[in-house]
Image (cartoon, rainbow over all chains, first blue to last red):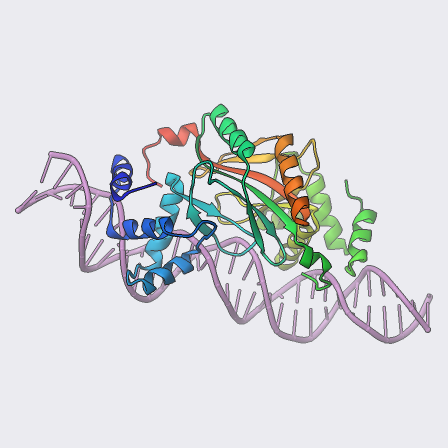
Length: 149
Length: 149
DNA sequence: CAAAGCATTGCAACTAATTCTCAATAGTGA
DNA sequence: TCACTATTGAGAATTAGTTGCAATGCTTTG
């Protein structure tokens, strides 16, 4: 769980700065219900609505930065844009099963996958940011559908 | 391993057709060295070079189709475009460890992950196409780098 | 084995997500 | 408080990927 202070230290350690925008964006993600993930556009709208307008450029820059810091997870579903969510440690860490036709998404947990991920990164000397099992599949409903594409 | 005939049956079964373009594209992927994956642009260039020019539209349409059939895997690395590779069954099935800064990619195998993937899809009634563990991390070299971004 | 029916192709125009440019603003360490 | 420089916002630019459409060519059926 990040606070404004811990975020500030992590940023400052790397020569970066804590800005009101970054703090507000982190807050939005921390207050999100589990299983909710936002696109840049979603985040933009949420911020407009709650009275903290932040430009789209800044939003794109910030989520990318936070993903690289390991604070956010970048989710790439079978859509044409990315989604972001808070990167939770075990036991809240989860994975996604996605229908490539209708994009229905089901979350599931697995401790063993997290272990494989950590060990693999460690073995290669990489600093782990996030590990996610991505299952591409076709849901029951779409299997029955005759529609092409 | 797909042949022109098995590809034809799978396509025809769904009311689709085997075209020279689809056959050529499948061949390119089957002749690729293990661990190689192509972007649409890469594939376009490869085909130009080998004397089988195919339009970019057709390439995009074909790789998407083959990914949805489970023939190709769609890889989304920390770049801005997708990559494709043949979807190999166990024991050639593998996963990717990626440096989000320099995009260096390391492949690794794990039978247990494949099992978790199959079981999860089955449990939900989904028809499995592909499952891949995506590990986002920072490689040793980039950890040492002071450069931002 | 010819013809009908319709999936597919190539081209060019288009879309939309994300990045970039740059002047103005504002955290930070000294 | 000051100097330094990271960050922001606005809009322009980029670019991966999609789409409309007329021409082409698989496939099936009669």
